[in-house]
Length: 202
Image 1 (cartoon, rainbow, N blue to C red):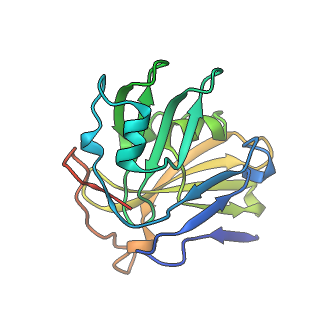
Image 2: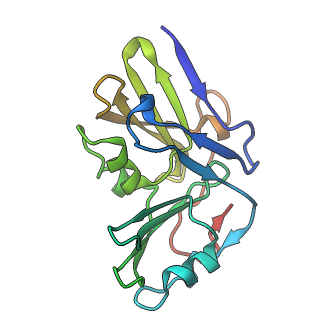
């Protein structure tokens, strides 16, 4: 069985990842995910009903992913702290350009929203950019991996599995995060994001 991996080269280093289409088909365009610097992003300063798209970008930097409506207005954007940290903030905007809500999406509640049969684009709109990709060609399986802090305070990875022939979700699994393992499959400890200020570090 062939098993190819794409992993960040170090734990704490800000990295640049060029993520091509899943099996060359899932995304219609190349997604460029760039971590350009290590800084603290004050996500708590983004206020629903008050903050605008421009104010959000000024406070948090250029988003790692963004979705636009037919008029070109940004209606959803994602900022991720992977791989060094374990949060991704998804910000939703109205068609007038004001913030509707802000969510930290790397948690069990959002993972449960991923359903069998979904496409890669469906998953990205729920969880944002993934940290790494594994391809198990002998199993016809592609995994998108998301590092997170579990409800039991452990650093874990949630992997969304796709069939590399149908390019649809076939399941998901949680395992200890190998980037922060303490050995013998023991996961490192962490503190789940609870909305505290300056919790988003890149």
